[in-house]
Image 1: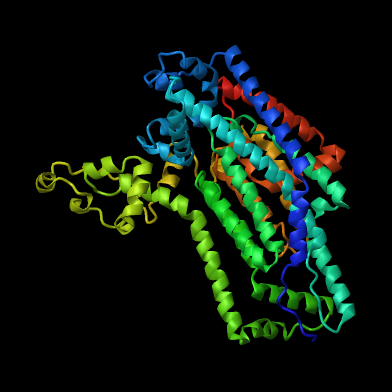
Image 2: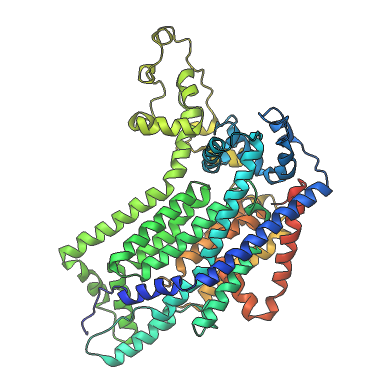
Length: 563
């Protein structure tokens, strides 16, 4: 067997030229920003008009804000126009921003506190600069949420524009793996690799010009997304999808960059996925693309893959394949770097899921630990709990100690002696679970979400969300159908993420929420844009898209059920 070069690094010039290629797209990016901004303004005005034409039946937000400071003055006029953007789930986020992230009710734990914390922070800054205008807190918080969400949506639109460019560049400029002293085998292996790495989404893209057209079409399609109203309302979909898209972009930039900067992009990837997980629980699904990234970048697995390709292409017997695979570990250096690589992967995974775990810890301490009323008062808001946690990490991590000595919280000695402030704990059912996570419990109890929910209790909402599921599963099926070798395909992480994400919502959650959550899956929109641009028979999907784009804001703004 010819000697194999098992260490294949991305080409330095390739990574630099890709960055230069992206920088040269300044005009296209600026045009996309302008178009996205115009569409966002249209959505805001369109929603306000419908909310004024049709009176909604629910006044919970008006009652919530009736006693807020500033509600009796002229500033209340702004609230009358923008309150429609705080309906449905937005009402929960608004409440959290008003009460400084205090989770008064158990069911509120379905909503992460990061967006309200951002709004509180910006509101405090705004009030320091604008002191002469007396506007109620509801108006300020909702207005800030609108501005923040539209900003991150536009930033996400830039990311979705660059998404196929990065993949397309990878497809054309991928590193050639070489076999020494065997040109025929080299030719066959490169041909094998071409069929292996190429993606059928981009088979119609023959050059850079076509790639630019497709990317621009994709970004415009994204601005007309089905979850139109949610990206401009008091929801966290815009921020979550923005960091999701950029996380996928940085992930692939790391794969195709040379050694000195690929780790920088890897850090940006983990940071983006970590921030996204601060906003939604389904951010833990980013462990899927991260896992496949570490598979791609593992030298041992690349060694195994090349041995497999060599034995397949040269049609030689595979009896020595197993022995040759594990000959990689004959070198102690290889063993060390293999362990180091997967230890790094484990640390990255823990970083990404840490926001979810921390939020569960907050709920556990709030409901399942027998602390004093003073402790509960000092930690009733998520913000205060976070600050106190940082100050006393090891004490807060002691989840098994239900009867904590009050002295460490500087409780008045009289209270300690008489125990008059001891909290009478009422255990919640989820506290007694082997893994005491509140999230699964409240999703089941308050939001009717459980395993195989839609098989046990079918919902007719699947009918109007069916086009999204159809496109998603069409992309998944076609990927596995058209790619014989999938493990090292650059799209595999994105596709598996889309598959798990879509399947979970279809089987276990409310079907219709896919309409707004799908914007966080760039692979979905890549496939969707590909079908619309290159196959006329799929044009009816765009009609459905526009229908939802225009009926969503009126339904949402008048408090009629919509996702």
